[in-house]
Image (cartoon, rainbow, N blue to C red):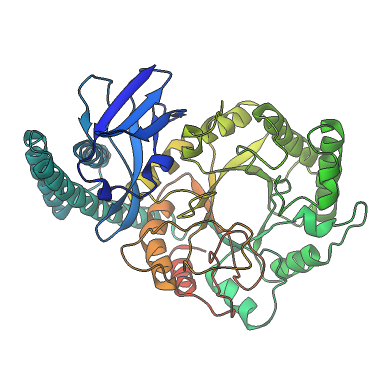
Length: 495
């Protein structure tokens, strides 16, 4: 059995539930199933392999809230590592590697980035040489970490600015999709007049539970109204996900089939998808076949079953509509859940298997619900956020990224998932903090060539939705500050 040990002189520099959320991953970034626990000296990681790996662990960072930080790749050894020195090393290593890569690609690394990186390296040198005095080493490590993260902010902002300027010079404004998920809302009134000022695309979810609440009796009124409104206002239409296996998406009567009757389950799925596609063929620009099938669902389907359902969804669409592009979406792309549950396929490998099946996928969707602890993606710095997009870009297909970020930690009675919200900012989580997140992360996302679509995952907090306070309009249907930023983003960058 593999064993790694870490000294943690100051446990308050880790999140209170850090052990439950930490994981160890190899060079392929697939987390190992591991037992991570405290002992008298610090943190112990036990697993079935003894390969080198990176430890990922959530830490509160001064002025930033919690971030998942990682060590560099560490080998097993009898002597324990000083955890905060290794987290500083890992963060500085990511920064320096990215600086070098962008330098070689012809981008200009500003002097203030180099200065902050030099400060981080100086503090890190002090941390490494003081490990026989753990409190002093931790203090220097924290100084190095803060300087590295400051340099990361400056570097990614400079990268986004330079790339976006170059892309505009080459081809003018972008044809990238910038959209919002309409949920169950039929656009009307003053709120509807604001949407074309911020978006060129709408996601019409086609929720099975809403369409066919009673078996065999379909109500198309909401979907028809949404499609008609989008077409009247010149919106691109992304329809789906046509299949999502959870209690908010499936009609109650589908639970009669459960796990014991997979054939009937698949038959019902196929019939529903073909009915939807037959009705709206020629009216939508993109089908989102399925979402979240890489994650265990309420039926307990295994990974092979979920892959087969993904294939079924694509095949059903193609029988009826052979031309409209298809995407399929994976959830939680960092795969931290694999450190706590047995999985064979990471989100990347799940998507890769479908790409290799050559079923005509036109793109891969990434669902990133940022800052939601149970069913979302843990907070990470903007460099790591962009690097994950680059990783999925190696699949060779365009990316459609769906996002949500909370604007409050207050109770949200209309949220389907009562997820605990992880503090992703150094101050209180507010609508202003939601906008500040978008101002930093969206340009870095838009600057990546594979990203051909950005969809905000929730529109209204006043109607039933999935994640707490993730909408663009609050419970009183007032626009949050993020809407103003999205309007400016569209005006500046999008046709």
